[in-house]
Image (tube, rainbow, N blue to C red; front, side, top):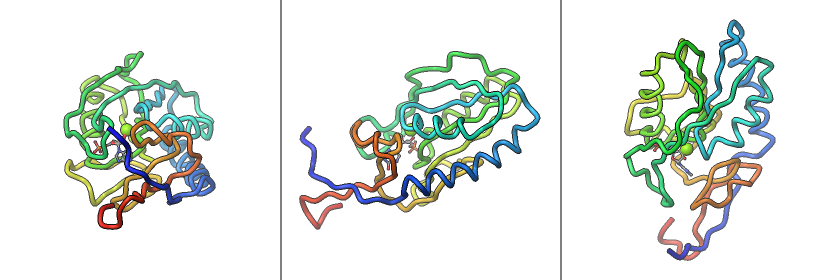
Length: 184
Ligand code: IMP
Ligand code: MG
């Protein structure tokens, strides 16, 4: 598949992301201040930068684990069918769990993952998403904490990809195609 030409316009600066994570980490710290059983679960691959910055703002005893679910493939549309490609290494029964997601879009991924993890009987199950596109929602699910609500734009950077590229941008940008004005 040849890639249509595009540019990336900045939507959220690295500085704004850092400030938001600092504020959110205080709320998370308050929620989990009473536990030494916290497992922070990053959903691969999009959350890897976010979880790295988030856990370093949490002065709590945390374990870090990862789960990989697929829904997007290489395209720009959710497949609506969620598969677990890589499961957690550790058991979460009786543990306090914070799921870290990059974006909640249709909601299929987060909803599927939460059902799965809930069935393993954690003591507490909370979620944080860096980004939320509420106008795209098809499944009724919402993260307990959200970094930024964004409009229906395809975004990249800060861990988030378009066809596996642009994860290494330090900010969030939106993809704008340059080959035609008629399509976006
Ligand atoms: P959902 O299942 O439709 O909520 O999709 C969630 C997943 O799709 C996210 O974790 C992302 O990996 C991916 N995704 C959703 N929107 C975007 C986007 O704008 N850019 C890149 N990936 C996205
Ligand atoms: Mg994802």
